[in-house]
Image (cartoon, rainbow, N blue to C red; front, side, top):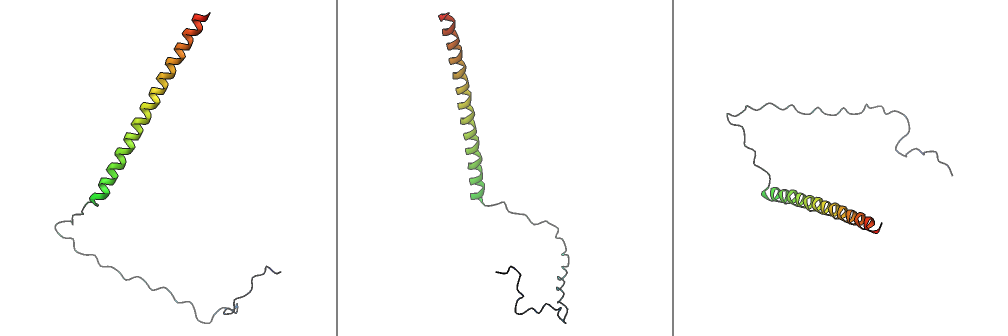
Length: 92
């Protein structure tokens, strides 16, 4: 089995007599005269704004619940540690 690349049937391997066609130059655009008033750009879709706002609010709420849960867990852990230390002192 040979791994040598076989020539394609349409290619003889010799350079062609005709040079390759040069790409056409893009047409030049003429600058338009500026109007006295710049065009107002309309804001994006109201639905997109609403969905983005809801996503931001949901993220803030999720972070708030997560941080408060973590704070509660840490305070409960500290209470259990101090209670355990008190029990250990009472046992001695």
